[in-house]
Length: 320
Picture (cartoon, rainbow, N blue to C red):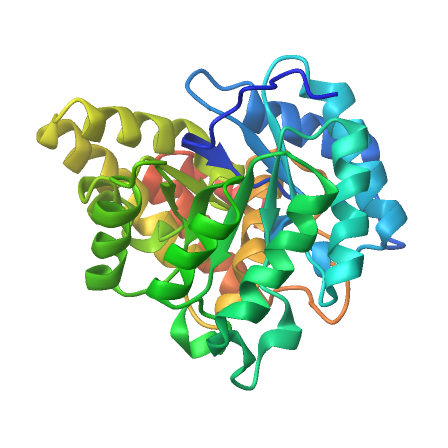
């Protein structure tokens, strides 16, 4: 049973990375340290495991269970732990949901199934049916991950409204629509429903603008490196302190530009390397088909960390 039975997904929620050994096995001790580094920052509302940032696509069911178990053991009595459901089949998604509920997760982040590509996501019954199977398996609150249109897996606006009505345990969306106009519409509409659905932005490359629109929180892989700055920015926006928000955004900007450059899929690879440079991880191993970053990428990361003030010139030279 979760230690946070009345959890509402909102506020600053880092998505944590998964530390790996050279043989691609899970480095539990390093993963635990990283988890605590992110989760126990003042102002962090919850922490996410088994997400994109932790390479869930390359983890078995048993590994996902292990990751959740040691995460709960490390921080679960002090901060809510959200766990991702990444599955192409509805029955497998329900099996994962039951496991995560039994382990003690407080909330589930539901990824869109790749099987809804090639236009199937445009049939509302496929989306609603997927979430209903998960909701039948557990009464935990759910976060629907809303992908951008370019992915071919984006839930339509009306589909989301129908989903919220049909599956009341959907309490938030992780919004990655990549469309500022649509993002603002999500915020204004979903957070004003009789049964409010929070919008958690994951537009980390333009976070200040997104938060200024009124998003009730953020769920971000960049929080694995700069959760403290994200908390400070969220608080400044909530306090209507534009000057402070601008100063914080100026600090964050160089690093998010380095993280979210092309190829976009290397964002969490870059975050691992950044944590090595900062002395928070010993090594930056990723599972294939992801591959080690080249020297030019690492140079850009070191420069961004130095510009942000997280890495001194002397330290940057030592890790070069």
